[in-house]
Length: 594
Image (cartoon, rainbow, N blue to C red; front, side):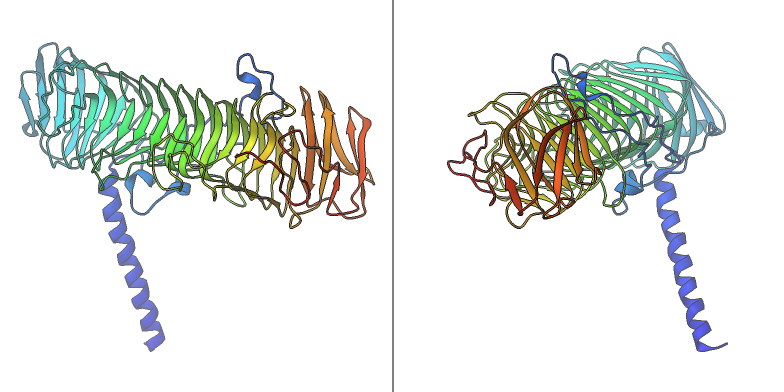
């Protein structure tokens, strides 16, 4: 055998050994879990005029299917970011645990691993256990350090006032397989903290303790009543995964679905109604080991909360259909990545708030579809990047605010609400479609405490209209640079692109009233079209399709509305901005506000 052949065989042997090792690591961790098939219905983004009492322009982006099942947000070896293996049939049990009022019966070959004290059940060995029946004071625990446990919860109704109905104790690894209808109700008293493993009482219907992991899968309906505090709660370094075909209905007096380590929703239907945060992954102070990460890669997720909708150190959305209604921020993190899926937001504060970065899409991809139907500020972050997708934003203050929300003068901290300027904050558009709208008044559709940069994509800005007030379409403290793509900025003119941008036309204070508009070249070829439902005063247009010495026309409802010849890099009504100042051509202005 030649030395070359021997070398090839040695490489193959090493690769096979590596693959076997990876499989041995992942499979025990994930147990019998879902194949990650998304339950997304591909529902289109709803009409952007859904916010009550608001006259909005009908320019919401059309939805596409864009639903992916997990590969977009995989990070390292974190099991919450991996795609599990799902068995569609109910696992065969080695023991059956039946609750009946104040008694518990255990049968089967694995009964020796089940300890019963009154109506408190503890499982101490790997295996599959079916739990069924009804009890008003029943509980099931997986003993500390026990791995390889599958609990088949089948037509089960457990309520408990002294502990969580289901507990996965420290460093344990378990799978809950939901069959039929399962209802778990936590009725503990906050005044009676009986949990000696933590200094903070974290009552929950399902409790996942420090270092433990839980996967919820199956094909039934899981009703979680966190009457005491939380619905499902994981402690430090815990991992909670929802997958399979389960419908999870979670209500909570505090947080609905939370883990200090990681939360992942891969498929199924998840409905959360919480008094505080809906879905949360924020470690306690001093906990540097917990990831504080949320992954949503499939399924249909609906969150209603009186505080923040979804909060973590890092939020990753890679698929699924999400609807978040919240009184505080809908999404709140240090870093937010939305690469795919369909997302609808109605919030009393920010739609997406990140102290560091918010990123939408992946270059070359089609998704996501994001509809911020109502918000105070639609997107606020130190840096905002749009790579692909269809994004509609309606904000009653700023539509998009590129600024540090932490209260510091740099982009570094998490969770603050100061609003102090970050001179380097940017909004960068590399691709996709962005429509930003604000009402008449003291509003900016796009407000950058740094600069606006566009390298591609299509942007329609429908900004504030109050002449002489602090209102505008695109308001920057730095510069506007358009290197590619197209932007139509309607509303008060604050700044326009500088000389290093593609060609620009400034239409000045011309009123664009309700109607259908089409931008055409001299041959009648359509460049862009849009429809307005109300009047916007002032406009500028930059596009890589505007050619020097070419003539262009804007028609309204089929008739000529405005025409020009692109005789220079910037042409039009310079110096007539309806915002403060209006120095066109170089991106600056006099008397600019901050």
